[in-house]
Length: 416
Image (tube, rainbow, N blue to C red):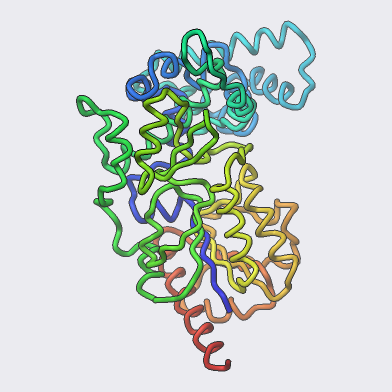
C-alpha cells in the first residue's frame, strides 16, 4: 500500500506565510514591478516589454468575464461587463462596441499606472483577480522565433518573446523576494541569483504540513507544483517537481535546462554568450510548453509513482483548469482502479468537485471535518473523500490523515 502526497501552493504558504501565490504574481505582472531588476539581468529591451501594455485587451476582458460579480461591485459599468461577456463568447459583432471596449481597456490600463496606491475600486479589482492565461498563452510560441543575427552577433527576439521573458523573470523575482533575498541591493547581478539556493529558508513554520509528514516517518511519495525546496522538509529527497524549480534555468537559445545546484558554470557560460536565459518554472497559464527531457522526466516519474499509489492526499492544490495536465493524470488514475482513493483537504470550500466533468459524481463523498472521524472516512466505499476544513482545523485534519495512513501501511506490512 503506497501513499502519495501532492502539495500545491497552499502547503508552501503554510510552511512560509511570506511566500507569494498566483494572486500576488498577478499584481506584479500588471505593474511590471521588477523592471529595474530585469533590466540589470536581461538588458533594457526586455525590461520595457511588460506582459500588459497600453494596447492589451485580453487580460482585462478575461478578468471581467471570469469575475462578473466582483467587477460590478468594484464599479465597472454593466455595459462594459456585457461587452466583455459578448466578446469572450464571440457575439460582440458591432465595430463601434468593439472600439468602445478597446478604449475602455486602455482607460483601465492607464488607471492602473496612475493609481500607485491601488485605492481605486477598479484597480483593486484587477490587481486582486487578474486572469493572465489567455494573454500569456498566445505568446508562448514566440519563443520558437529566437534567432541569431550574424551582423550584430546578437540573439534576436520579437516583442512577444520579450514579454514572455519579462513575465517569467517577474514571477521569479517575486519568489526570491518573498524568500528573503535582497534583490534591491546595489550591484545585485546574475551571479547572486545563481547562488541564492545556498541560503537557508529563514522563517519556516515548524508545524507545517511538511513537518507533520516528516515527524510521522511515513514512507510516502512527495509530489509538488511549487518551485521551492520546502517540500524537502518532509524528509524526502526524491521529490517530483511538476512545475519546475527555482534552481532550474532554461537556455532557450540552445533548448537546454540546467540546475544551478550543480551546473552553475554551464549557466554562466550560456549567459556570458548572450543566450536567452529564463527561470524554468511553469507560471500560471493554460499552456505548459514541454521543451526538455528534465520536465518530461518529472511527469514520467509522477505517473510511475501513481501506478503503485493506493492513497493520494492532496493539500493546497486547487484543481484549476489550467492545470489539466495534472488533473488528467489523477482522473485516469482513479478511473483505472476502483480501490484507489484521493483524500482532499478542501480549505474554505475552494474546490467544487461536482462542477468538474472529469470526476465521476458517484465516487465523491463530501463532508465537514470532525475530530476523530478520519478513521471512518478512509474506510468509506468512495474514491474521493472531500473533507471541508477551515484554518483552525486544517492541520489537525491532516495529522489525523497521516497517522491513520501510517497505521494502515504498517498493518499491511505485518500481513505480508
